[in-house]
Image 1 (cartoon, one colour):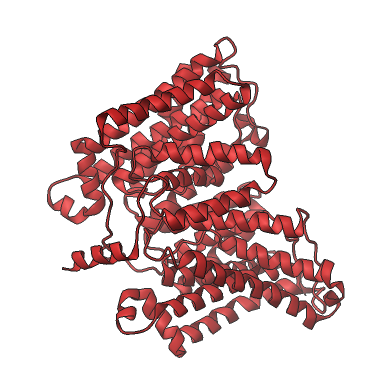
Image 2 (cartoon, one colour):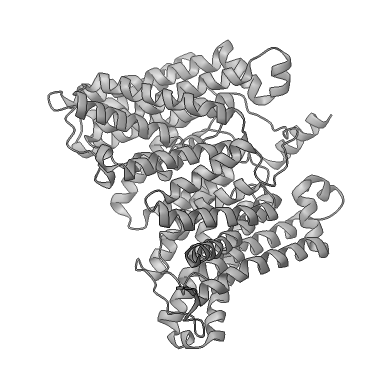
Length: 621
């Protein structure tokens, strides 16, 4: 009996931390409509600064409970101040941008914060002492439970109660709730939303910093703690229902218990269980535990597709320039050829996501699932059945399409962030399986020594890779101009009207999804052939984020968008890594500047508040 009680307490303690993170993210999203990918960076900032304060700068503070609490509050305050700076300089200029572009900007912010802390505090972990007065444990039967975790457990419901009172009993809270429901109407009533948004972001980021600082007495702070926490936080927010504080609380409790019991019974599949839980909840309730059913989608100005230069001659010159540059790199050194292969493979991967996003409007946070399945299918077919490169590529694409046929029914029932998180859940299951199924995949050691190109000149593979990229671009152009592409875009922009016109929107979305997954699997197989090895990282969150960043940075509705994005992220990133120690931070700064001044991507045109207001007014008229 005591075992079950201890595991429940462990789960509730973890749930309190998750809730403080999720409450802050829910508040920020509800008012600003910004999916803050950098929310985990504020958690990391609060933990590292508070830990450095009590271990390096003022170690005597760790001996007194009040000064230790003060150090934690200082860490939370610094996170809140950074949140205020981010809201003024980054969130506010992007207020009228399409919803996915702030995601790119906050990704850049997370890179910048990571390298800033690396430069300021160094790469080492921070091991803080236990909290004075709460160093012991409470005996429950034959088991013991740490006093500090018991304190954290009690803190979660208190934070929920305080937030509830703040949002329901104060004028500021009522304005926040009104802004969550209809921000434009609040502005029309004469209430300036700017200070309101600033206050919400400060509160949300402060809660994240406090959650991080509170972890110090139980675990070390490090520069890798942001990604895992922000992923679990997204799970809680989406599973609870976007904008629902109460939903975030109950989802935190559920995920905390799954995490606690999963560590004991399934230690190698804990993260898989978390995402499977979210997938099951969203399969039954697509709007989350306490989310509202989506009503009519807010109409946005969708830009017409841009094929590049208007002149036919100039277009052919652009295609020729692309081919000549690639061929020029192919006759250069080994390093340049390696970068070229990476850029071309990632171009195919980015195109696979762009096909789906530009035509159907589906957004995936886990597109690396199909890339990883293609990579492992090619590698395993070569190891066990001695497939050559061509057969391995076909095998990779086929396996990815079969996986897409398994997921398409679930995805057709969801939309927006819910659909994106379902795709992320599937990708995490694939990644965890690749990491833990050692007998088949080799686990973290991967499958190495693959000899696809042992007897084939490298230039033949590179020429074939370049040809596939050109064909994929031409197919993309043809898809957009075809009646199939027009029907897809009609279902994307006005699904109810498309259904009334007799279009089978679900089937159309399924078809483009199969094409997208097949191209992603083909890209994964080519990646395996290029590297001669495959590791679980091919299906990781970072790989999915790379694809999304490439598409959004280059321009979703531009034919050459994935080309520009892959060259920028892979080509420029590889070159900066050779010359700058803190290249990720510099890349993050460049990403933020690009998103602010070119929100439609490198090849897009600038979205301005005036243009968006004009579009909204026309839609209302």
